[in-house]
Image 1 (cartoon, helix red, strand yellow):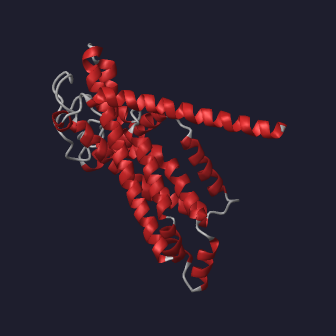
Image 2 (cartoon, one colour):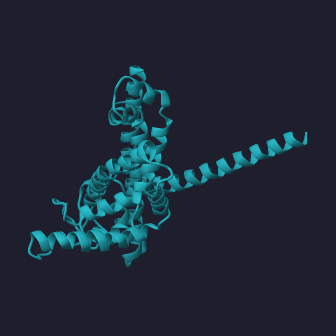
Image 3 (cartoon, one colour):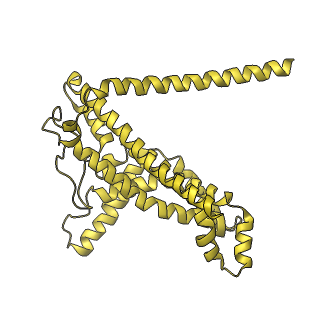
Length: 300
C-alpha cells in the first residue's frame, strides 16, 4: 500500500508539472496571439520599416531571418553530419583525437550565446574577413565587416553541437546487421556508411536541422556583433551585406524606443510573426522527414 501510494503521488506530481508547463505555454502564446493579431496585416508583413520604426512593416527583417536560417543550415548540417559520422563510425574511443573532439563538442554546448558573437567578431569578421580584404581587395573594406555570411557562420558554430548529437544518435540507432550485411556483400566501409547507414538515419539528420532552426531563429546575442543592422529598409543582395533580423528588431524596439506604449503593438506583432515563421520552417523540415521515413519504410 505504501509503495502504491508513492507511485500514485509521483504520477500526480508529474501530471501537475505537465499541466503547469502547458498552462504557462498557453498563457504566453495566447497573450502574444491576442495582442499581436491586431497588428499583423499584409502591409505590416510586406512593407519596409520607416524612420523611427514606429510605422511601416517588417519585411526586411523577415527576409533577413529566413536567409540567415537557410545559410546557417547549409553550413551546419554537412559539418555536423561529418563529425557525427566520425564519432559513430570511425573514431577510436581510446584515441586522443576522439577524446579532445568530444570534449570540444561538449564544451561548445555549454558556452553562452553572446560568447559566440564575440568569437564571430574576432575570428570571422576581423581575422577571416580582414584576411580576405588584404589578400583579394588590397585592404579595401569588403568582407572585414559585419555581414550576412559571418552571422550565418557564427550561428552554425552555435548550433553545431545540437546537430552532432542528434545525428550521432540516429546513426547509432541503425541496426548493426545492416552494416554487417553490406560489408559481407563486398561493400567498403565508406560505401556502407553513405549508401546504407546514412540513408537509414536521414530522419535523424533532418531532426538535427529542425533543432538547429529552432535554436538559431530566435537567437539575438551572437548576431549583435556580426551582421544585424539597427535600421536597414532595403534587402541584402550580397553575402557581405548587413541585414535586419526579427529577433534583433524586437530587441531594438523594446530597448531603444523613447515611447514604449507606441511600440507595444509592433512588438507583439513582430513576436507573433517570428513564432509563426519558426513554426513554418520547422513544419517544412518535419514534413520532409516524414516523407523520408515513409519512403524508407517502403524500401524495407
